[in-house]
Length: 303
Ligand code: ASP
Image (cartoon, rainbow, N blue to C red; front, side, top):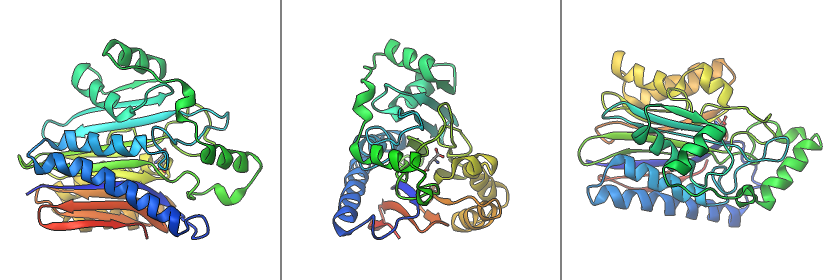
């Protein structure tokens, strides 16, 4: 058995902002990312490789709020966060506050595999990346006209954009089970539009935005990061599966529609377990998501 699920962010997706043409672009972007990761699993490759590959494709797609196309901070910069976890070894890597790293998920993996640390931030993370052979990109690489216009609307006091609207939706993530029976999870984001510089959300926090444990599940989250950190969302789901013996669906439901709602936390998660069961649930209007397993066909959905 093997399988993969990916997400491209959750939030309020007004039909006016997501017309048919735009929706097609999002669906195509999800399909491309799913196929890139799934091809690795199909050939017997590792879940970690599949997760990185899917996330890289989404980071490179300017439609999504990760890598190129990331949202802007209030000051007009892009600050990127990412994390990854290996369910077989419980090894994890994370990087935050990045401004010159083309694919933050790859740096998170490098930190996991080639440093004694779990998380590096800002200039220290980027210097480590260079030492490990990565090339830095200019900050202009991340610029997109659409994200800039969204920042200007927020700066202009457009409160319609203050929630989890499509304006900053687009955090990306992937969870995978490989043919060797190992799980992996990864998440990457530009954060929240107009965020204060230096703000770090749940995405690079192991246990909040990302968690993987072969004994439970692999989870990647998207939503209002502050609440996801407080609820330790990704780890909470794994703990319910492991210690309370809940089914994956039940564990995800209790956290997304229970704990998060109680804290007014909007968003969702994707999760997979060692049996290849997938759960993709959200308490927002929509969540860009896609999945495929050895026993179930491609599913791509938004609402
Ligand atoms: N969770 C991300 C953050 O708070 C944002 C998102 O998923 O939309 O940085």
